Length: 231
Image (cartoon, rainbow, N blue to C red; front, side, top):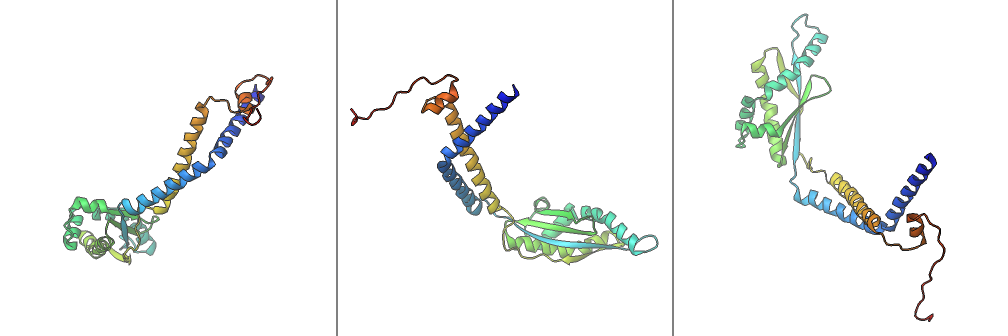
């Protein structure tokens, strides 16, 4: 029983491979067309997004013996606290007013992403916008306002800008290369599946191999084809 199962599985794989080779040209053509379509959509249709990032360093005064190790541990523990202090409607409203972008606190919140960097006392604020100038301008405003906001809330901590935002020259999304690769792959798979299903549903006998593969009976005779000239 085990040998028969292995043999049937091997034949099935051979049939799949033969079906792929038989329709290789239209499959590749469809895959290339799908890749070109995905490239065109990502490059010319989907809205582009730009990102500008500012990195901030939290420095503190240790509350016990003032050693550098205690100061470092204290800063690492409270970085998330200061991120939450900045992730407030009050701060967002202040940034929007200073930047004069006519944005609400909710809209600005959707544009910002705060991230703690590798469990250190450094965190980043990334601004995502459809305009590279707006992304950098908001990031600059955050770099200017955040240190004073933290200083007003806690006298034992201060923020320092360690990496100023740059004007983004290329969009962060959509990823044109990724869209193109996915389009090509989807075109390849879907076209192959289409031809495979069509072949499996086709019950026509084309040659002796088809007859032998579908019916477990010996072939007794074949009728040759005659052309009109032979007659």
